[in-house]
Length: 179
Image 1 (spheres, rainbow, N blue to C red):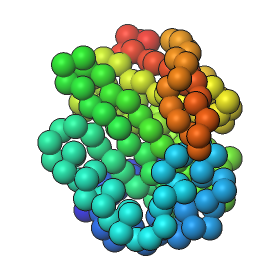
Image 2: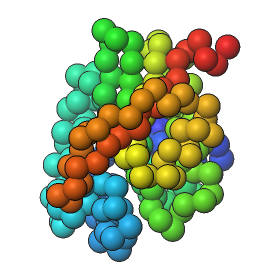
Image 3: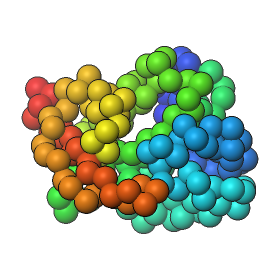
Image 4: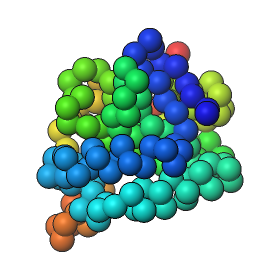
């Protein structure tokens, strides 16, 4: 299993079918919380949903299009983080993530995103990392700001979220910003 150690309590593991049931358990228990910002959460009703997601994620990883990892905190699957897209031509990746509500406030996502930013620059030779978050998603926007990402703009009509059209804030950080 491909894993990356972030710190003693936190690891990233490339998604694998054995994680599907744990993903389903989290979403089933926390659907109201997760569906606030994740349009797919209301459709994730069985293990097959996550097995399909994992299968597609592994295919995209093999083709160099993305890298989807499971967040493992103290030995427990607690969420997901990924390079949603890896664009070699533009030397840019886009990070996406979600975390179980029970594990919020422990610095897990800040550590994981910070790690992936550094990984993108050092291991993938990218020049830019981008995160898109709904304008009203305060926790994700604060995470970007904590990591000194620059608000590059607001894009209207970016996503349909439960029949509402929402705008997204686009944050970026460049390799040169870390010097």
